[in-house]
Amino acid sequence: MPPVTLSNGADAASEESIDLPLFNISQETPELGRAIVKSAAKWGFLWITGSPASESGGDGGLYDLNEETVDHVFDISRSFFKDSPVSEKEECRIKNNRGFVGMHVENLDPTKHKRGDFKQAFNLADPDPATGQWRQPIPTTFKKNDAALRDFHARCRRIATRILRLIALGLSIDDVDWLVRSHENASHSARFLYYPSLQSDSDYDPEADIRAGAHSDYGSITLLFTRPDQPGLEILTPDGKTWASVPVFPENYHSKTFPPIVVNIGDLLSYWTNGLLKSTVHRVVVAPPSDNDGKSDSDRFSIAIFVQPSDDTVLMPIPSPLIEERAADFKGKIVGHGGGVVDAEALSSLTAGQHLSSRLRATYGSVYTEE
Ligand SMILES: O=C(O)CCC(=O)C(=O)O
Ligand SMILES: [Fe+2]
Image (cartoon, rainbow, N blue to C red; front, side, top):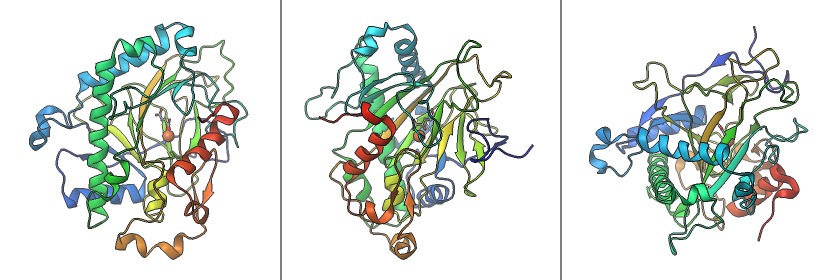
């Protein structure tokens, strides 16, 4: 059977799967940076190990995101989506891209799907470092787990910082903190995702609906945490037509219970590098085993950390020789996919904040509000 392509059906799971390159980021070297940049330029996606304590050596444990910590955060997420009353969710409904997103509220690919995505989400920005306060109303389930969520955010930020430094090393930027600096005062967002099981009485239509529509991410990088036995992520391969599924575990991975973190490049970093790094289009489908109606009796949970520079960051290309030489070719190229695309030239007069707002307006429609 040929692989499923963009033009023949919205959401059948792909026949092909892809083994992405896997990197252990417990060390920070130019060689590792170059290998990460190579993968980000080819696939826009890669895997990193979560640097469990036993491997983190010289980092003094700063980057530790072990199985227990991640499992606990997934337990909090499951409890919020599945056990908390509707009122708890309603009280924290999305505003300024923060809070609870109900079923079908977001439509990541409105060009292809009339109905919004078959998922629920909660976007939790990290606490304001100046005041220590959360920047949004917090549901009771999260309040009860305040320390665990703060800790998770802090650890994810350190991992993001390491990856940004590795990318800078790989791009031979003289100032290794060039990327980190524009992210220092920005709020990162953890997006808890819940894709409910699709029972036989669900009105999910496999010809028309999808769990998360095809899109590219809007920010710099995304860290994606997934669960064993819950596949569904697919990426558009470099030919621009073929979908490949990303398995939860790399082949021969040392663990069967703690998947590595998926890292992908967002539009801003693609733009910043004159398209060298790829902001790859991806989607979430109902993966096998699904029944004949394309439904699935299992829930899927994931957590995406959207790493974003400060709103006032001007989107000028990164000062790296590798990038400057691509400027002429990049002119007129399209950045982004799904809700709201921009051509590279228009983007050059924008700030990161303006770009984010325009893309959010396209995916949330009238639900998106700003203060
Ligand atoms: O749930 C997933 O695996 C991916 C989610 C995603 O791509 C997103 O929310 O941007
Ligand atoms: Fe995404």
